[in-house]
Amino acid sequence: MKTGRYIFLSLIFLISCEEEIALPTLSLTPESLSIDIGSVGELTLQIDDLEDAIFGISLRIAYDSTGVSFAGSTEFGEGYFSSSEIVTFLKDTSSAIHIATTLTSGEGVSGSGILYTLEFEGKSQGSHLVEILPNFLFFYDSSGSKITIPNLIISSATINVE
Image 1 (cartoon, rainbow, N blue to C red):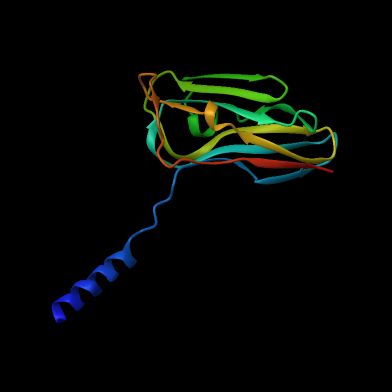
Image 2 (spheres, rainbow, N blue to C red):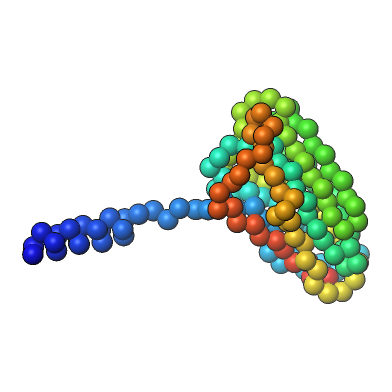
């Protein structure tokens, strides 16, 4: 009977000592941004806790073009993909931003960092969703093959125009 009790207590001890594993996240921050009509605010597209190294990313971000307009990108290609040997493509179609970035040489990147800082201008009052579209999100390895990031959490943002 004592052996069973020791096994049970040992299991409880092991379970309580396990570290919480951080899941990889692709997010627009802040989660909620308030700006005035005619003013510009910034949303940061960042990746956190990525264990698998990536060589490139392509994605589409949808936004309500009646409420906000895309005003450009700062820190474009800086930060997370901080190599000088990158190729980046950005196209705004007035309701979606198409972005693709790839390293042209070197090591893939992992961990956490800022991908882009995106600027939006307020056009009309209200709450306007800016959303990373999961069906248009792809990660690539050094051979150009698509890779899956397990358990990826995707978080979008809301721009409140006042």
